[in-house]
Image (cartoon, rainbow, N blue to C red; front, side):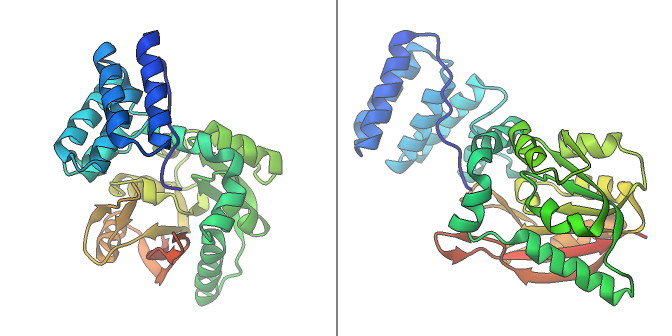
Length: 311
């Protein structure tokens, strides 16, 4: 999953809306120049028309007009302060914004609300997704190395989505809690009856409101690809873990250091960067291995599976 479909919110100007729709028709027929002209007209008629500006940015980039694309995406973000289409991410990708601060809460919610209905089939069938199985194997390996049975009293599944990781870990959990920003995703998870509790919440807000030292295992399967700055969330997770508790997660990675915004509009985190952040949060790495939890256009995506423990 790399993008949302067009998010149309009326400009309030009937003529501008019609020109936007005509532009989409031209795009479907491959007429980029004609679409760009109509989108510019729509934006001129309704200067706050975020959808027109955003699509114009996409079209201008395809036409090789980077500066024009940057200008259009900036107008799209100004027209929609919540940034539901991810104009901030597009600007960061084009080198015109701060990547780690670019992914808005509204963008992530919109992305997953749109995707909820086909999530369970699209991930394994189209992307070859196997994150939960990789996480389960890593956690079981760590528990064996520590001489403990792979059982946990309290398990927190962050960014739980429709419950794919929850299904894998349910047999190991006495109590299983799911948290996700998308109400549509939580609704799908609730239909399965996997979790003892589910919450529609931003991860940071949920962790800050939770009792400290409360969770024996915290999971984050394919979640941190949507987080640019992991330092605060690692610190919050460390506080939420019971003594000896585990954090298990998957991330996409790259050969360099630090955090990188990929063309897919997901974040990749360097291995050494992750180790430093986990250490700073007081979490000890018990397992870190190269893996691939998904593919893009048939090519495995470089990733890491990590299990860390609290003191």
